[in-house]
Length: 213
Image 1 (cartoon, rainbow, N blue to C red):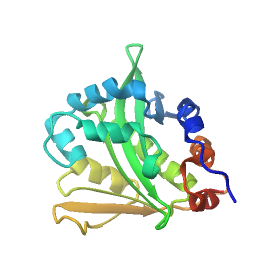
Image 2 (image 1 turned 45 degrees about the vertical axis):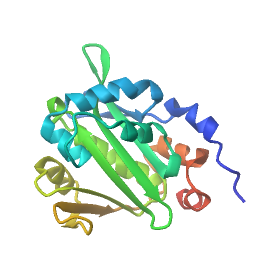
Image 3 (image 1 turned 60 degrees about the horizontal axis):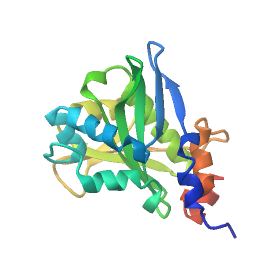
């Protein structure tokens, strides 16, 4: 019988679960869990997106990230939902250049995700790096499939998913959307070890913890 998750421990140690990846051109990208101290920076990030990018990410018209969505994003681990931000040093300042939210379903062993990249930072490999990190993190939690949905005219997200080997189909919930998904394969050694540590620290239900081992 596994011990009950200690959410207080996990939430007080979010900084432990940080990945640094190298982009094309040699620049470093830091991917880490969203923390309460990031709330203002995340709101600024969403306000800075173009109208179309914000529409695509929020699946509707909005001038900023709604307070209810910010609240959900900040409650890391609740309902097996997670939020991460991608940062780069811009003029010596850590700046959010992308974000993602994802949720793991232990019953289906699927992970659903959504992500965005700041308009000024697109085309630099950030989306590819974040998607690869999401796949790794999901596999570490025991997921067998990663999927997302987007508008049929969201060429940037569709191009990113196609390049990463995702298969496409119509979304059952809305004819305006397309679904993209990819099977995940568990590796003996999971390269993003920090995400497996996060799973073992107590976020996932017992069944998912067993699958991740």
